[in-house]
Length: 384
Image (cartoon, rainbow, N blue to C red; front, top):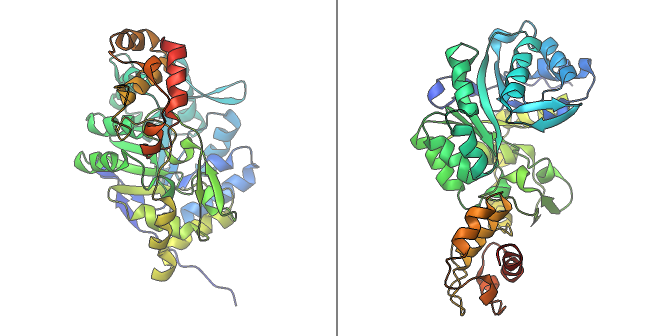
């Protein structure tokens, strides 16, 4: 006997936009380079099952033409999210801040998707403080997006990235309507995440949760998984991949149940490569309460060891009187093309990295797995 799934879809309000979005929407990354008939089938099945929000950041011409064909006749029923700063350079994805390239690929989006406007235009993939500051300055991409909004080429402006610190700033700045950030079990205990979520609630910024399966890692059969920082988010500078030990098998329904229970989340955008994966995600809507339970899984993700200093000062006191967090902040600045600024501040320190006696007490107290002694040695090499 064939079981016919009901067309069940709940919607949520996307922050101050007042747009009603499907609680489970669709990321399209896994549809790139697939045959057109396959992509069209997935998109049409998603629309048929009630999905109305689609994230579309790929700039490749063939992909955009395929998607344009898939949405033909459906534009009035869907919400399209484009990205300002995503380019296709010689067939390869590239993030760009070049105004001419950004304009070229955004106008190309409108042409290939056969539409006069997008519903959300994201400032694409901002990670560092320096990049955030560049986007938001008077001649940055935010101003370009604002111009497109005045011209009627986008209804709302968004911000996407994997850095909780700059994402929180975006939510608080007053110029962003929607924030896109990775949310999953893997960053359940990440420092800075609660503040970012609270900022979205306080400022009524719609929150789109990307990478709900942490790049598919959460659904793997292996109990030990390694997750890259872009798949789970981070607090400040980029860090090393993190390893988690799963005590139980995790399902798509549990992942989505966890995310949609977080305050402020408007929609989750799992990437689905085929209709089977799509149905596995949409199973959330007719799953039982037992199938949605995830509390027993949280203990596997209760520590967030990034290997990156977040300047919490748990490492102090230092027997050599080094302000460890401040030194490592200056080291991060030096790695972010701000070496001159970092050097000036470093030279004023009463105790610097060269004073480290390598006792290791600080590393033992660090809750984030920072190799403090090694980074002190690196600071000596970079800053003297």
